[in-house]
Each structure stands twice: as C-alpha cells, then as structure tokens.
Image (cartoon, rainbow, N blue to C red):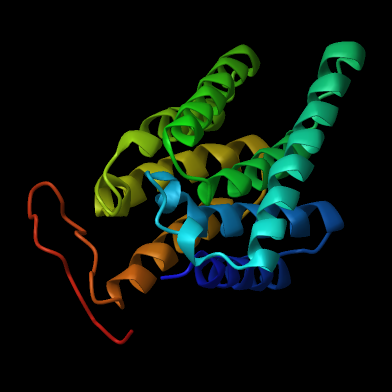
Length: 215
C-alpha cells in the first residue's frame, strides 16, 4: 500500500475525530498529526518500502514534513530551555510531523538517524516525566532495524501503540487521543491486509500472512 494512501486514511481519521470532539485549532492539529503519524508509523521498519513509490510532489512533501517538523521541535525546545515554558500539545504536533518525514526515508543512515531521534525522545521523555514520549522513543529506536512487515505489523505492536496513545491522552487531557492513535495504526495494518502480500498479524506465533487481496 502506498504511503500516500496510508497518510490520506490517517488524515481522514483525524478529521473525523476533530469533528466529533470539541473544536479548537490546537486540538484539531493534535488529532490530525497523531492520526496521520499513527497511520504511517508501522512503516518505520526498514528499509522502507515506500521510497520507490514516491513521486516528485510526495518527495517534496516529505522534506517539508521533515524540516518543518524539525523547526517546530527546535522552537518548542527553545521555549522550554530559555523561558521554561512547555506546551505539550505543540510538542506532540512537532514530533509527529517530524517523524512523518522519516517514514519514507530508506537505508542504513536513515535507520541510524531514526534510532538517534528515538533515543532523543527517550531522554526528553525521561527528563519531563512523560511516559508516552519514552514509549514512542523506544518504538522509534527499535522499529527501523526490523524486517519490513514484520513485528511492527502485528497485533502486539498495535497494543503497544494503544498503550502509548493512552499515556499521551493522560498527558494532554484530550479525550479520544488513544482511540485516534489506535485507529490510525489499525488502518495501516488493515490496508496492508488488502494487498497480495498481506500482513502477519500474529507473528511470530503464527508466521503466515492474513490476506484479503483486493489490490
């Protein structure tokens, strides 16, 4: 399944959530960014299979996500260090946007950079006592070195993502974030189940792929 399709599905989930829950611009951005990244995050495993399917516009958007997210993370970090002002919603948006840019990168250097980013998230989460950020960092450190459509494409990874989403919801006090995260991640696995290769939902206990090959 193309990365653009996963991204579109995740964005639709975020839009639905923002329409269902009380609207504010910040909440809207949080729902969209969490859902979009959740719908792509299973493909942090590497090397990414999405890169060869990206067109020129998609590659340009990838760079926008990567560098735009980096600037947002730097801005949030600057406010925290210099003025001791911390905005968890803005930090969540920045991290999700930044990581979207990494999903469609490929190669050993990409994997090392992703793991380095994950280590940074663990450190930041530890210092700010945000368990969801520690969990996300651990996922980001671990995922790039796994076989594509392996452990990140299982019910176990989905459960882990739900736990991260639950901690994020507690941190932000924003109703529905856990369900948005789970729905986004689930949408990725289900969409890949519709492809000829299918998904090994129960790997490594059951190593055969589940398939509903419509594509």
